[in-house]
Amino acid sequence: MRIYTKTGDQGETGLFGGKRVRKDSPRIHAVGSVDELNALVGACRTFKVLPRVDEMLHSVQRHLYTVGADLGTPADGKSKVPRITKDDAALLEQWIDELSEFLKPLEHFILPGGCSAAARLHVACSVCRRAERAAVTLADTEKIGDPVLQYLNRLSDLLFVMARYVNNDAGVEEEKI
Image (cartoon, rainbow, N blue to C red):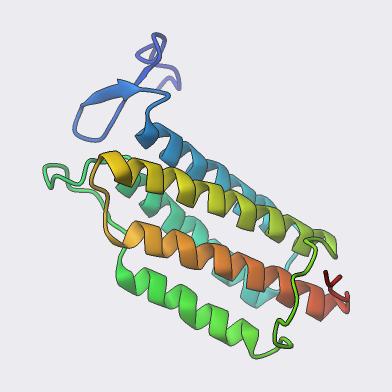
């Protein structure tokens, strides 16, 4: 099977169900931002993060494929694709609580950074927020799966907490503002 199809050479791409849209449409911006986030989460995993964090990030990557499919498919019910659920977002909340138990309460803003893994997780958090903004823009014009925005919002929180957790484990002090 060839990787190139030539069907996108004029600036359009296909959605699940066969509909074609411009590659600069809000839907494709949202899907592309989620794709970028997924790649960045994969890059975070290369920093040999703690096994528990790696396990969470691996699950997040799998969820992000579902988020991408969800955003890439009109929510009209005609195309059957996996959809992100409120339970998926609730799982992120459980992980945030689990990791937060090891952290001092946050009483100041902190500068993103620290050890390499934490710095990359901070970048992933920012990219996640961009993906969320793209999904919000899409939701202004077309119906999307209800839990997608909640999932992306919780995921940015999780990535932030993970960065703090990894820095804490590495003995790196957070720089307060």
